[in-house]
Length: 43
Image (cartoon, one colour):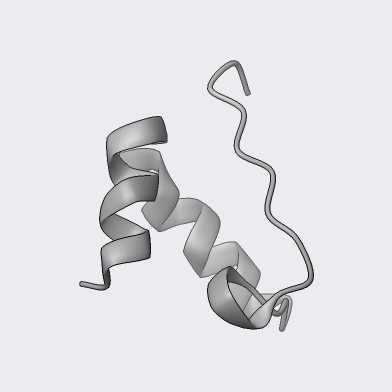
């Protein structure tokens, strides 16, 4: 795991894994390669 994914996990919990899978399927650019990242605990 990367340091950034560890930080995301600490912030929103294990739910990031399903979000990550959707991002891969939709061919989103994410994490260090994306343009921006919004993390919202309430979603």
